Length: 421
Image 1 (cartoon, rainbow, N blue to C red):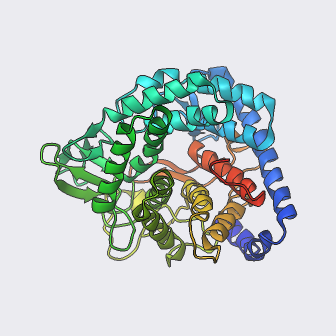
Image 2: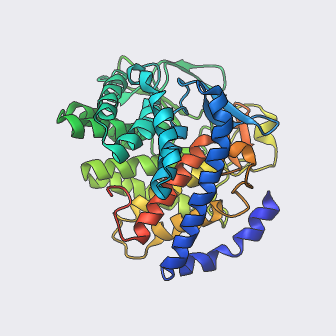
């Protein structure tokens, strides 16, 4: 992988510098990637439709498509990818499949067992409603927001992510963990308030975001993965990691979730504190000395660095291999395209970086060969190295955010708002 990455990384800088001058050529780039994505999605559908009560997630050790149940946090991304591919191509076959795979998730509107309802429902039904204005879809989204709200605590001022969390040292168990990923679920709550006129959902989202600002961000605007609260007093008990290298390291995908989540929070509230947080978290990512030149990060910015003690004794954590995480890159690219529209710096740095990332992911270093990779678009993602799962594999959410970023770039090339089009 590293040879391919270095080889294709050399030519990217010139392409990025020319991208805003040569918009017609960039449209060709966008169209080619949409066409490839449609090809891969149709290849995946041929297999997924044989087991249509399960949802694509990754590949198994033999490279075959691996699926999971609807109550897994990743269940909504496949439908969302179909919607984004339809949006970019107007392929009616994909629209029909998107409807089918979205409506399989209807029961999730009443799900309350973990915080990922935003991913599961908003990435599927949110895109479905945005592109069809089907009233039924709106009502399902509102009901899902009600379900997500049940996990909010007045005492902590936060939405509980998991029902419990055990420290990797085996010494502590916590009853109210909040992970940075949870910022991504706030968009569902913002939507529900706008759709109903009921401010309570937005209020919950704001209180949660405020506590992330207060308790989860470090002084350098990197972020802790997990903050554990006392459910009775609301006090912070610990700051740890679940999927990163160390408690004091910077898990790359967590940083990406934060950039994206605070960008959304600013869009929905106009609160400059959220914009500042999004920009400073983005600057940490972009300017990090450990970020490779192709802007696709290692799975943790501090993996194997001196001064960081691995969260768990594992060969996967002590090996010198520094795996890339294309999923973190795709999330960041999508967020940066939106963030670039709010930044007043005038230097286009966020848009340039997003384009650089998109070009990297679309290169042979990360983009799969046709009819390979289980039908997934991207290769070289990381789920959780501490847990020993999904290491250097495709992941459904990487494809989802790649397609979202591609759509956003396409809209910017047409001088349109990349979000509220």
